[in-house]
Length: 83
Image (cartoon, rainbow, N blue to C red; front, side, top):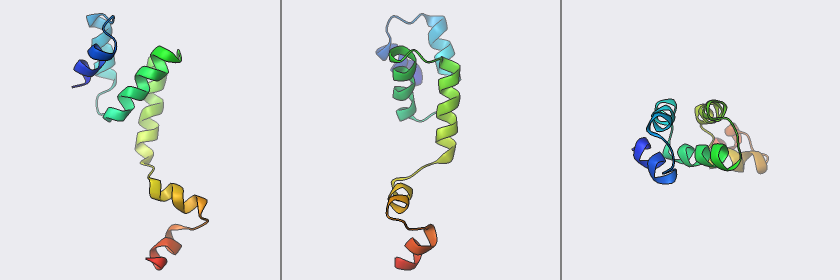
């Protein structure tokens, strides 16, 4: 799936370069693939550094509920008590 995605988004990519992108992105979510293409091809960031950054972000598993809690001044305990 990743190989087909990258080949479609970057048809100018050689087979060897495509293989590197596919190998480096093992386990990343689909949304991260789009972010990777934009970061590297449009913004000029490094491939390996961007993959590492995306992996760190993915490992944190942020959610919209956490964002809402922070901006409403609630902690996790207050949200559970209010439920």
